[in-house]
Each structure stands twice: as C-alpha cells, then as structure tokens.
Length: 183
Image (cartoon, rainbow, N blue to C red; front, side, top):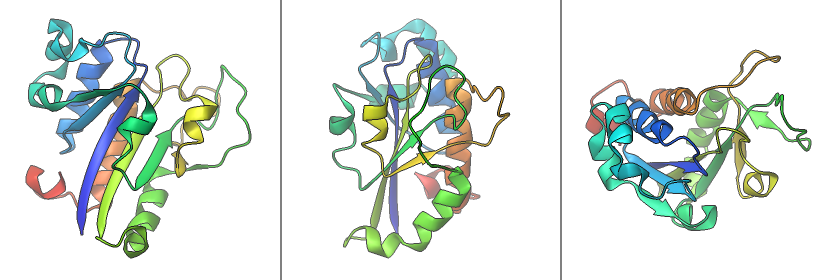
C-alpha cells in the first residue's frame, strides 16, 4: 500500500502557525504542507515562520500555495476536513464528526475500494484559526474529523490540531518505525 498525505491550512491568519504546523508535521513524519489563500503568501520565507518551524525548514521549502481547496486536493482521493464538533462561535449545520482514529482505521480496512492503483492520497484540511472551516469547504470533504475535547471549550491551537491528527494517522499506518516509513 502506498500512502501520501497532504496537510492543508486554509486562510491562515497568524503566520507563526505555519511554522509551528510544519514542525508538528515533521515530528510525526510528514512533509507535504500546502496553504490555501493565506493572509501572507510569503509566509514560508518569513524569519518568524522559519524560527517557529524549529528544524522543519525543509517542510517549509517544499510547501505549496494554492488559490483554493479544489486545486489543493485535485490529486487526492480522500479529503478530510477538521473541526470542533462543539463550536462556541458559530452555529453549525447538523454535521457528523468522526474521531480521527476511528476514521483512519476504517479507511485502511477499505483501502482496496479507494482506487484501482492501491494508493491512498489523503488530504487533511485545517480551517482558519478564527472561524475554522466554512460550510462550503466542509462540503468538499469526504469526512469531517473532530478530536474529542471539552464540550464547553474545544478550541485547539492550529499546530496542536495538526499534531494530534498527524499522530493518529501515523499510528494508524504503522508509523512506529523510522521517518521514511511513514512519508
């Protein structure tokens, strides 16, 4: 089974979060980072971002910027959004959220149904720090992943959310070995 995983940050407002997310990804063995409509299109080159990446400059150097989510997921066969099942700031249309570990386990069980080439090309989408994913963006996803958190305060920092999802995916694909085993 071949697996490629892209982490997509949408409308990132605080550029330091880009560096922190790159670090979280690399720590878990992933290196495909994309931004969609970031506030600062030169975020990857900013000194503050490189400092926050703390050793993950290589992830920033190969990162890509896309104009919209459709472009960012064009080569993906599974698209997962992320969000808070309990949102304190906005009313959500009734939407089912799945715990990442549960979804990943089910995904791996049905990998043969995904694509004739047996390649899982997963996109993990993270919305803006302030508003999360829009309804329109969520509608582009095959599933919405939600980390079980405190129902009265479920807000995670963007990089923390990236790290939690990356960890669950790494464990699901057997990432107990070396860095090269899970990219």
